[in-house]
Structures are given as C-alpha cells and as structure tokens.
Length: 226
Length: 291
Image 1 (tube, rainbow over the protein chains, first blue to last red):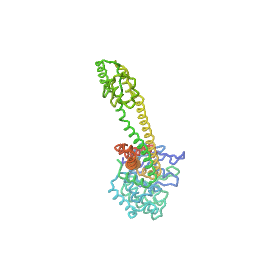
Image 2: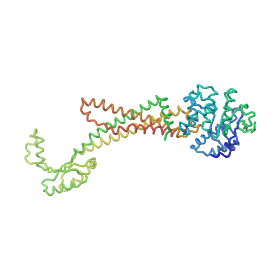
Image 3: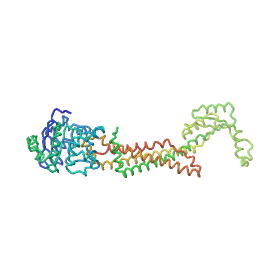
Image 4: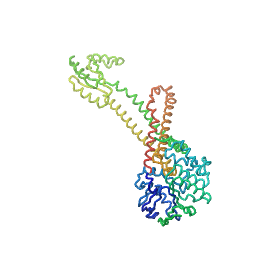
C-alpha cells in the first residue's frame, strides 16, 4: 500500500448499468487524512462511486487507485486485501440479524484473523466510541435505527481502516442523532482516517470547511469547499 | 488451516439447519450402509471360496507300462515347474485299491474286471498364485506334451465358474460402491449448495468486510466433513449392532451364521470414508458456486 499519494483517485472513470450511464468520465482525488463529501440528488451516482471504491463494482472505463493500488488490475485474491483497509458504513446497514451487536462488530476483526483477546478489547473500545457499550448483547432488531447506524459505524472503524466510506449515514436519523453520528466521524477523522461521506443532506457539510464533490446524473458538476 | 471461528460457524449452521443436515447425514448413512453390507457379503463369500483352490488338484495320467526311470523323469519335469506346490505319485495298484475301497458297498460295479484298468498317475497341487482358470489351462496343456504323459485331467469347469463368480462379484461391488459414492458426494454437494444459498446475504456481508474465499469456504467444508463423518460413524454403529445383535443371535440357532466374518478393521475406516466423501461434495459445490 502506498500511503503517501492520494488515498482515493478516480481517473476518467465511467460506469454503466444496462446501457444506462451511472457515472461518466469522473476524475477526482481524496487526499490522505482528508474528510470529504459526495453530494447530489438521488440517482446521481453517489452509491455507485462508493461501490467502486470498495470494489463491489468495477469501472467500465478509466482507472481507480486506492492507497496507490490500481484496483482494476487486482486479481480476485487481491480484492479482500484492499477491502481490509476500507471501512464501510452501508446505506442498508448490512447487520447480521442472527448475531448480537458484539458479534456484528467483531466480525470485521475475525475476518482479519485477529486474536480473540484483542477482539474483546477492540470491540469494547469501538462500541464505547459510538456510545453503545451497554447494547453489546442486544440483537439488531432490538435496536432503533440510530443505534443500528452506530453499530455499523463501530464495525466500520473497529479494524482501524485507512479509508472510511459512509453511504447516507444519517439517512433515516433525527437531527440530534445525525449530529451525534457526525461527531463520531469527526473524532475518527481526527485520528487520521481518510473519510468520504455520500449524502444528499446539505446540513452535514454546511460550514464544515471540507471539500464537497457535487454529482448530477453521473457527472461531476463541481468541487467546492463548504 | 481452518480457524476456530470457522468451526464455530460450522457448528452454528449444523444446529440452525438441523433438519437439512440430519437428512443429508441419514442419506449418507444409507448409502454407506448398502456399500458396507455388499462388501460384508462379498468378503464372506470371498473368504469361503478363497480356500477352495487349495483342495483342487490336477491328475496327470501316465502311459501304460512306463519304466521307473521314465516315471521319475516325468515327476522331475513336473516338479521343476514354478507353479507346482506338490507332486504325489499314485501307482495303478494304489489307485485300484482306493477305487475298491470307495466302491466297497457297490462291489457289483467291479464284477468281471480281473485286470487293473487304471493307469499310473500323478496328483499335482498348484501354488495359490497359479490358481486362475487360464494359468491352470496353460499348465495342463504344457504338461500334456511331456513324453510319458497320456492325459491331464482337472476341474476346468469348476475353476472357471469360481473365477467368473468372484470376478463378477468384484466388478458388481466396485460398480455399486462407485455409484453410491457418487450419490453420497452429490447429496453433500446439494446440501452445501442449499446452505450456501440460504446464507447468501451473510456471505455477501463477509466479502464486503474483506473476507477471503478461504474464510467463506472453511465453514462449509467443515460442515461437509461433519455430515460425512457422522454418516460414516452411524453406519459403523449400525453394522456392529447388525453383527452382534442380529447375526450372532441368529447364529445361536442357525450355526452357519456363526461362521460369518466381520471385517472390523476395514469397517473402522467408515467415518474417514464418510468425511472424505463429505468434503469432496462440499469442495465440488464451492468450486462451482459463483461468489
């Protein structure tokens, strides 16, 4: 992994689904340690961009570099290794209903082969970060939407990724909970993690001083500092 | 090497999808049981017929009035053959005496026979490895050409029938085992495929979190091994029960059952055979699945 250059770099990236353009000729970079936002209306390509970063999709044209690694040239065995450097807060949470909160968060570490003793400490710390230590034994269906969102954040950061991606992390949350979630992201960012948040909620980046990439119908229509 | 977590996932799946796993295990048990039972029958028939050739011998008839030196030459010539285990000379007088003893209750058969009509002969026993129907036929043919030999007699029909029965049984056994083993592998293949599809969402999440193929596959391979091993173990227990409870009990009233041999050493490998078939089925399923 090359951690000196940009963490995420898109060069003339295009992506189509069933001959419909989802992204068109996108070129952008997110620097190491930067916290940036992707915004645009529904269907503008925000989720597709994030999927391309965590390699759930591959571009039809152009190249994507994650921490210096060219994603399109990675073999099947290389993809998991890149994903281990990326934490993702999925829009649909992707929590496992048959596992409690502790096990859901611990999964990210078990996949990385971390020892059981270390898992206990790190999961506890991660749950503490999102103020959910007391819910470790609860199951996802027993939690509110906001709590589930925070569990997903805990799972995304527990392995201390170099890049954190969040897809509409406050989508279904009330303003107070959303503010709490954003505070958590800022704390994580303060530790040096590169963060890219996709959102259509302008309140999240207003007066933040962070770069915002604006997408519309699959095109990058502007980059500004808000 | 599978991690303890892979074993934990496999155990969770075994209990969560208990009925599917139980059904697969019982199918594997049934397949292995039929194979084992066929093997048991073949093993006993084979053991019963294995010693028959030892009682088998060829009779080499010598020409009439062959001088003693010539007889010795024929004996030496036959004895020098690699296939021969023993050679016994039977003079015509001994043969006639034996015939009379055999027919002592039917003396009328020999009435009117004053001269001994029987020739001198050699009783030849062959080594076990030369007992096939073809080697015996060849041996008889070459022996017939030795000067002083008038005829060679042996149970050609008996030998070739025995040979055919054993070969037929072996082929049928191998075919049955191959078909049922393929069936067992297919059961494990289908089970793992069903379990895999049932956990598709979970596996997708594993992958998105950075799981390697090995991490995803390990619990399924363990599950396949567990189902196969349990099927094999159940089969082993069932065979022991069948032998000790059923066959030995019947043997108390029907003595022939007591003579049946139980190949315990071979049957002890059944759990391993089950495990191998289970892992094979799981591996084929995982190799064919797109994920």
